[in-house]
Structure formats: C-alpha cells, structure tokens
Image (cartoon, rainbow, N blue to C red; front, top):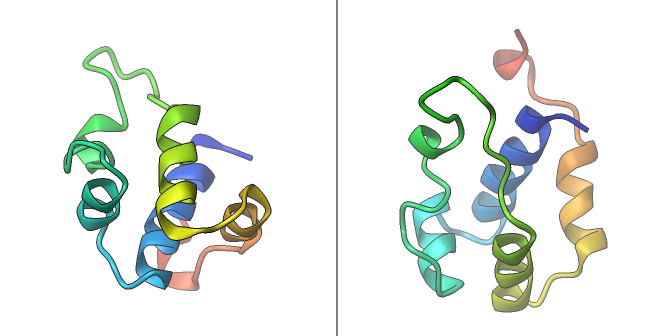
Amino acid sequence: MTHADVWRAIERFATAHGMSCSGLAKCSGLDPTTFNRSKRWSREGQPRWPSTNSISKILASTGASIQDFAKYIDVPPPENEQK
C-alpha cells in the first residue's frame, strides 16, 4: 500500500458515494480542503498521509467499514491513471 494508493482510494470512495473529495470532507465534518491534491505533499516534498481521524470520519459519515474502504485501495488503477 502506497501513499498514492491511499489517496486514490479516497478519490474512488468519494466518487462511489456520489461526492467529490471536497464534498466527502464536508459531509464528514472536515474542512472541505482536507483531501485537496495540494495538501498531499509538504512544501519539502514529503508525502502527507491522511490521518486515521479523517478516515474514521469518512467511514462514519457514509456508514462504511474499514473493510469497505480497503476495497478501494486494492483496486488497480485504470490504465489512464497508471504511470
């Protein structure tokens, strides 16, 4: 599981629940910018991982389990997303 895998899972999870990443954050009681692409890396170029608190809140707001969320991590990216 990589940094990119987790962020891609959040994007897919939001889409599967009919929301953007911003909408998912708002629905979960988080700042709408929580999952912005600009917040995924520090100014020094270090990866920023989503917090367990943020993941917990998106699960609670959607009624999903951690196992449900993990399914979005295991899905290989579509060809147009692969590098």
